[in-house]
Amino acid sequence: MPILPIDSGRYGTKEMLAVFDDQKKIDYQLQIEGAAAISQGEIGMIPKKSAQNIFAASRSGKISAKRVKQLEAKSDHDTAALVEALSEKCQVNARPWIHYGLTSNDLVDTSTSMQMRDALAIIEPKVARLALLLAKKAIEHREVPAVGRTHGQHASIISFGLKFANWASEMAKHVERIEEIKKRVLLCKTLGVVGTGSLMGAKAIEVQRRVSKRLGLFPVEVTTQIIPRERYAEYVFQLALIGSTLEKISIEIRNLQRTEIAEVAEHFKEGQMGSSAVPVKRNPIKSERISSLSKLLRSQMSASFENIPLWHERDLSNSANERFTIPMCSILLDEMLETMLRIIDKLRVNTEKIEQNLYVTKGQIFAEFVLEALIKKGVPRFVAYRDVQRVAFEAHDKGIDYSDAIKNDKAVSSKLTESEIDEIFTPQSHLGAAPQIITNVNNTVNKICKKFI
Image (cartoon, rainbow, N blue to C red; front, side, top):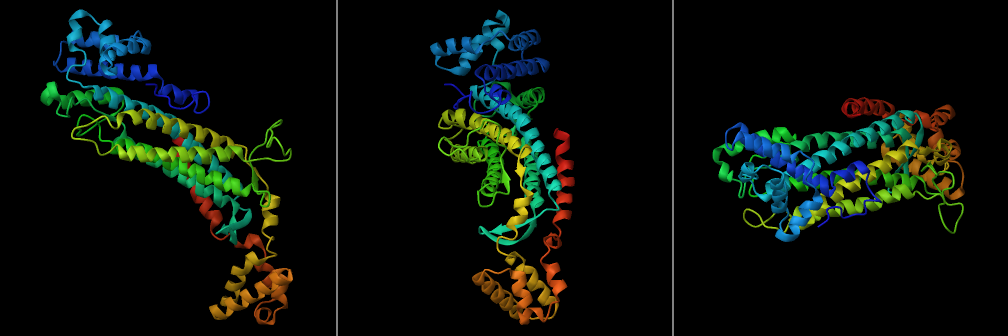
């Protein structure tokens, strides 16, 4: 069965697609066979010369996926075919010691760990790069007052850079999460048929320790025939979590690119067409693609969690779908990260429109600050609240500026001077702690992420 379930010409970088290539999977499993043999030879479990011969053959580059498939067509067993193909390249006296004490899933699960290891090595730097890029954008726009929206309504004033800071911080947290899961997910298992070490006996633990070190993995503490599928579920969950953050960013970009809002826009290259029918359209297609792929990525969590409860020491009800879930999640997230990096790098921010949108409600976005000023003058909160609300509703109905309505209302203007009211209606006065928050986030993101670049 092919292990690339999606069109390799459409999604994912060549680097990521190579991790899940058929030949690469064979090479991973040959590395495991070689590492196991040489480790067993080092502690006298099998003849040292045989171990060295197996090790050399496993890294010769002469065992092709094509040959393994030919042998598999006869045996109908992928691991048996790989062992036979390796045997063909080994000396006669070394052949009895190939795959000694191992079972199929020692190769299958450990090679999956190697795939995840190499996939994370591609994903993690991209997450870090995106975090740093977002932090840079946050600093760039930290002094830009903008509409803050809740429930889709104008709520209060924020720094436009705070949007980027929120995203940057979460991407940096994803870097930390990736680092944390490695010890639980990137596991080596060479404990045989039911997790006892089988033919290797008590020395099986030492063999596994040595193999793990050679492969850059962590030795699993206890298994059945397979690595516990909680570990795979955590890997898929982490990738889906990153994907959900990317979709969160993409949805905000899509909303801010609405014609009525128009505060940001994806880069629109020369010659690009937004619609086959409407020549003037500039659709946020890259952000929409991320939203679409995120749905597919999250859907893989269901199968991954269903794979956790298996019969006894194992059954095969997980095997077929894992040929899809692990590669698909890795390739999809890689594609989404590449797309988001391009979006953010060339994102057009329309500061003029951001400023205009502050006054769409004719100044009613400043109501919170009028309320605060009255309270500071000694007006009871609910008295002040009712006055601010009353004047706002009346101004809305009459279509007049809220600041003018405030100045003309005796209940309010008797408490506030005209200069005090003018200061209230100055957007730059209401950024609060946002600039410092953004600076703090930028420092944290750089501390966490720069080492991965």
